[in-house]
Image 1 (cartoon, rainbow, N blue to C red):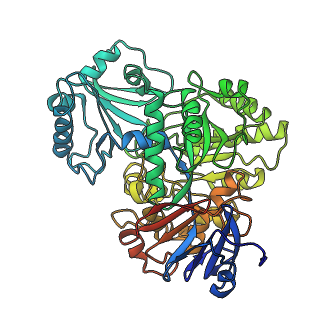
Image 2: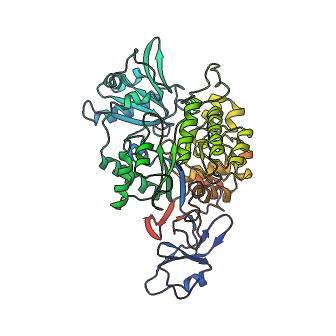
Image 3: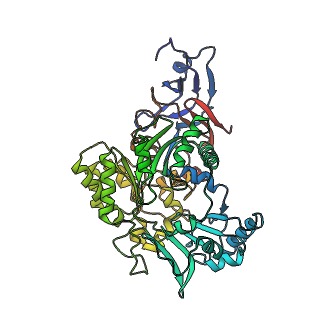
Length: 541
């Protein structure tokens, strides 16, 4: 700490959690967007000069800006304008259909009605909506109703007609079409959804930028300053890279983004990125190319995650294997050899096994102990798989909001033993696997407080405890949300803690996340102030 330097900003009189090892300080000084010093009020205020901005935290709790390590930023921004089909907004099938009909009444005839968020387990009917349900509610508009997980959708008759999908349409590889008595019932899972999406008008670059800006500003209001966009290219292909660059250059990129490139066969943007020199690490601390993503299976709640044992009451269903072993191994090796980090979707133990094996083979052929390949979600790993991840330097990247939102669904489709032991973040923390956390928004809300509550209590929204042994302490939960999110992006030197030299990304809350009663974290916490590089970007005081 040098008296010759005048701080640009000082926050004082607070409880500032700097990191799990660093602990609490009263005050913090910022210079040129980065942390200059931390310490007691008196020491830090001695760095005050005539131009220094000073913020009195009035005893409030502050932490490093949170890192949502797996969400879909563009999709989050886009779906903020769709019909809210979550259980909170539409708890019954009738309520959901009424909401869709209301939106249709406000939409020009023939215009698409999009909705997302339903969970059939939480609907009063206990089943997926059908084509007929949607036809009755919305006969004159094409409708695509997407399940919360994003791996299942329901289309009405007009949507199927516009897409040219009939009973004679071949089922795409890695996809599922639903039938009732030999007739399409509107159910589409995994790659089958692409049949309908091909008929939906493409988004413009401006619409993509608007979604980035809208979603990013929402994250800032929650204390989230960094995120991983988990499948860049999924909505508009390589045009999404252009949209991100244009958003950054025009000052419309609100949060730091780590771009994960869609690498699935047929829709991959990896070759375009490779030709443009966009490999892992390219960019800056605001916008950086991260990993490559391929999907190996679906979702557990939708019964499409690839398991080695069947789903409850469905002895012939072990989920969906998206790609054959040889193709997964070839994609992983090709990307690994070209310098890409991998961040691939694998939820069921069958998919996790396929992915770990591909990583192991690529690393054996071309060793790189610090590549930090990731298993996105990693919902139902085995003890043997966890040990192999540890040995190979592979990182689990779970979304602990799933426990809150879908825990009861996991029990419903898998039984208590498998359901309750899912997403074993406590085990990974004890093993030193440095697990991060995220929301997978718009699959779940990016609200960090339900995520933190789930990590600390392992309780679902209904109050079911999903394996007490997997609970984290308060500081472990915050470490997953900050330091370990940065680590899995190879960014631990520049963010994730409040220490000298790192970016001054700071979130201030009206509730003490280390000391407040547990239940108030979920129900009574707001982000009051968010700073990015020492600049106030959200102020709700």
